[in-house]
Image (cartoon, rainbow, N blue to C red; front, side, top):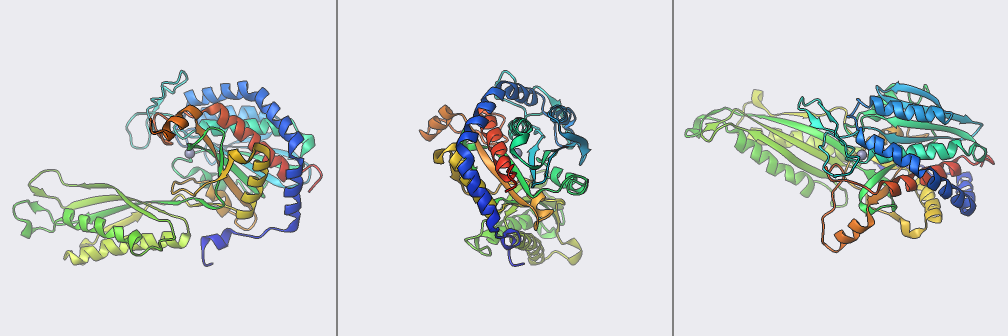
Length: 451
Ligand code: ZN
């Protein structure tokens, strides 16, 4: 395969176009019905949201969270399995012959001390792998994801006469550490449960007004690699540098040379990031240490470009060490974290199809194509696990309260980003938009007429 894109892009047959067309034509009556139902469900969904927000749990520790979701799915009539991929939840609703649609929500919070001042702000603490106790917060909005996802499940469970197929609800753990999707797949998500034809999810967005929908056909989020470089030197007295091999100077040369991976070796038309986020060495003014450590984040879209960047880091680290006169047995070691978070690819024609129906439903002002981002999501694993059979889309739902968005546009305030201790989305709009959007897309993909 030449590029990652060609691996995932597949043309679609005419029958799917017919489905899309029928869906667009069917929108008006159904739109009113779904929207009214969402409005009626909102008080209960907001109650769920506030409970989830006040009680976040870290990656792979989503015990209470998973239990709450499992109970709700059971009450709606799903066959529910817990403990899939450690703490994941799978709910299956079989409703006759038809496609299998999987809706995914992620469940984990972040080690962030919440500072939103909301009445239902999290006061939870936990001790992550680092060993240092911290506050825990749904600073990425996964609480809105779960509430919108339950909202969609409810709408679809109440409308079984309007669709034919199988609905698979996936509550995924550990998105924030990039391991949850893989854990669920390794635990038989596609073998013990119906394998999806379509996989859908949404993520709240901290740069769009609340209720906006954004989508990116093709690559939507990046490959995320964490790379550790240990640079040995020969330590000694700071006043006698000629008796040492200074790892600080060597690591500095590596840092500078790494800049050329993007500026000189990468196609200007291909997005890539190499950021040295941590540089640790030494303990005192007059001591040359015997080691320096670099921590690097590497972002890319295609698998080929990812490998090129990773190979380049190893090549530059070694080359600079040779230039510094380091002996062969004192070369830098380069470690790439495994597993990594792979890029997320939105199946192009499927994305355009859902976007067209969203436009018809929500109006063109609320639905826009947006640039891809260099952030990461492990949602891409669900496509990569079966690239020939699965079509996948993750879309954004704007969460910025309108007044804050307007003030930011006027330059009066700076908006908090996702993962900020101040991120407080307009949850009501995110949840209502997402519940309606996920349910509407599912109804269109599993038409009662059989398509
Ligand atoms: Zn997230």
